[in-house]
Amino acid sequence: MKEYLNYIDGKWVPSKSGRTFENRNPANWDEIIGIFTKSTKEDVEEAVQSAKKAYKMWSKVPAPKRGEIMRRAAEILLERKEEVATLLAKENGKIMKEARGDVQEGIDTAFYAFGEGRRLFSFNTPSELPDKFALTFRMPVGVFAVITPWNFPIALPAWKIFPALLAGNTVVFKPPSDAPGCAYELVKILEEAGVPPGVINLVFGGGGEVGEALLTHSDIRGVAFTGSSEVGSRIAEVAGKHLKKISLELGGKNAQIVMDDANLELALEGAIWGAYATAGQRCTATSRIIVHEKVFDKFLEMFVERAKALKVGNPLDETTEMGPVINEAQRNKIHEYVEIGKKEGAKLILGGEPLKGGEYDKGWFYKPTVFIDVDPNMRIAQEEIFGPVVAFIKVKNLDEAIDVLNGTMYGLSSSIYTQDVNNAMRAIQRIEAGITYINGPTIGAECHLPFGGVKHTGNGHREGGWTVYEIFTEMKTVYIDFSGKLQKAQIDTWEEQG
Image (cartoon, rainbow, N blue to C red; front, side, top):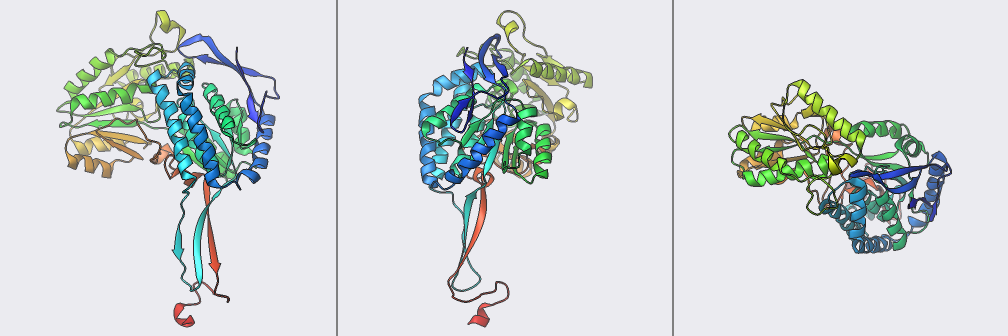
């Protein structure tokens, strides 16, 4: 049985607690993937001090040189893509096709960071005074805590760690307890790529102990977190008291609109992929499908027929289309929401229960589920379920569709299927979301574009692309006066000096 250790100051070390926890396969709970050290506040203290010490050196390394290390990490991850994807599928439950995509997202992000090492653009602007230059520079922040969830165990850490390191910060990384093996592999790759000791530190353990210790530590200058809005609110509260820089990527209740002029076959493929990829356990998953009344019955029939035929099973089987949910607690939560939906008066027409018998009895499998007769104000249409449960909502026109889509506290991703460019443009203008897809599903973000949402989906930051570097840098404004005399901004004028 493989034992996984923390990584602190360039060394693989056990927790001072001597405690461990098991990482199990959600498709076969009898299979233990590894034993992981369970950390304490003392381990966090060591990791933070290691990162703080390393920051003095790492922040002075030229960004292009830091970028070369990111490139080497990308190349190593590319070489090991299949190996890491297989581990990811085993500990996370994603089908292999999705697991490879998760790893590829990390590879793409690392290569993007490599290029950013020769950019990190800022602004120069004319001064209002003569013989004076006004410039800005991007500076690193300091020690960052990176806290990520289990549903994208390579992509999401990569989205944060690669830009954080490229910008000159050092990192203490707390991965999820449900899919920690990928974090170990990612940090091992960074070590092999040449990241110096202390620059990246890995601490396994739970949010209550490790997470809280990171949030309250005075030497942590920033926190980058992806997870639920409830936990994000807690992080904002605690980190705000300590005036830390925080980036929060939180929940979603994403919807796909299907208009009466849509290509229904295309809309169907997008809806199925958006709803049931990763068993619905994505912050961008399609959990509401808003359909024009003229095509509602036809599209619903198409969707149910396709959902019934989905092959649910072992993620390592290349023919499987949907794997398990992550654990028993998550499956129970999903089922509780199904019961809530029935009690609210929604009509369950597909699924609504765990899969049982044979291989299903060893894992946490749940049937693809469909509700109709859903009022937009029902809890199943308002709250993030994080599972393979879809609510169908019938509307009369585009305006009503957009009002329903906007009618939640979330605003991450959105989608509309239409062949009318005017409908598409009105949707782009009126939809309250950080991401809008035209004739595409609500999932499928690309690493070189901004990613994030509005309302309770986050705190305004955008990961991905060039915007993520706004999270991991601070702007420094520099004035260079070579006039040889005192010039008083806003007081001295050009006319007076002329």
